[in-house]
Amino acid sequence: MSLDDAQQFASDNYSGICPEAWEAMAAANTGHAPAYGEDAWTTRAADAFRTLFETPCEVFFAFNGTAANALALASLCQSYHSVLCADSAHVETDECGAPEFFSNGSKLLTVRTEGGKLTPQAIRGLATNRSDIHFPRPRAVTITQPTETGQVYTLSEIRALSAECRRLGLALHMDGARFANACASLGCSAADMTWRSGVDVLCFGGTKNGMHAGEAVVFFDAKLAEDFGYRCKQAGQLASKMRFLSAPWVGMLESGAWLRNAQHGNACAARFAAAVSGLPGVSALFPVEANAVFLSLPPAMAEGLRSRGWRFYTFIGGGARFMFAWDARDERIDQLIADLNALAAVAA
Ligand SMILES: *Cc1c(COP(=O)(O)O)cnc(C)c1O
Image (cartoon, rainbow, N blue to C red):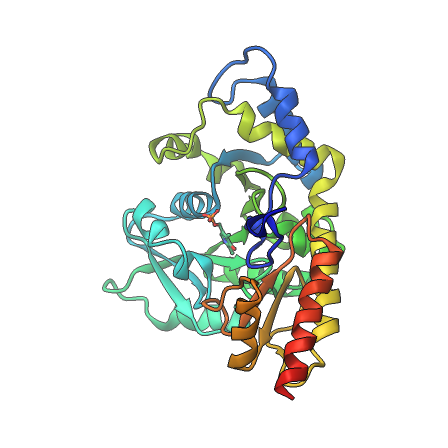
């Protein structure tokens, strides 16, 4: 194995495709099938979502999370509306203005948060601050589950948020780029995490969960899904060979890989955090509740890790971020732990 093939924990999208997704794509790769989602795989994938969510939801398949979020939010808003989100939300910090672009100008209004979690009070404060004609009218709230720094909203937190949204006349969107990790973390059903807790629209991430690409936009209120297909097509998000975007979901959902993959990533993160957070100079910046570990490291240790070949991001959440994907290997995690131990010993 060359150095470039050595497993890294910089991002969960450094990983490849899990066997269940790959096999479903291979199975879909026989003969011809109708295009643009009229095929049997796409029907089966949408049905698998309905089974998982225990409700007749409307499901659409987009290529990536930025498009899924932007189009889902656009479907909730007119151009003069606004969307409330955390200051660290991916839609605000990492989507290059796509939500504003695809909604023709609906403005994101950010709230300062701890660990990226919105609260009912924060929403109320922002939504009721102004009601005059000069200010974009609040129409939706988006929460990231788990947050960008790996915290998981509890069901009661989601319910309190959705209750506040109802009172304020706002729709509730969930950016679930790592939705599976949140379900694994809480051990709750996908239904409890979403519509039973008042979520109107979910973007369910497949890429970081082990697929080659693809996020599902799941509407729990069919009315909100009206015309969404046209929105996807206009935005260049309607796959003509749709079966290759939908079949992996069949593999993930019908086999249970979606949850197993997430449980594995979460367990790796917990083990890694427990092993290193006692080292001199090293501490976890955020509670480890999903598959992310953010470490505060002395600069020399961060430098040392990089010179030993490790890659990690420092532009999210401050500190060094380590993400554990479906295929995180124990030996590689042990190497990272050993390198951190060695660097801590030198620094001490
Ligand atoms: C990765 C991610 C997305 C989607 O990103 P794409 O690169 O567009 O697929 C959305 N939200 C969050 C919180 C993410 O981590």
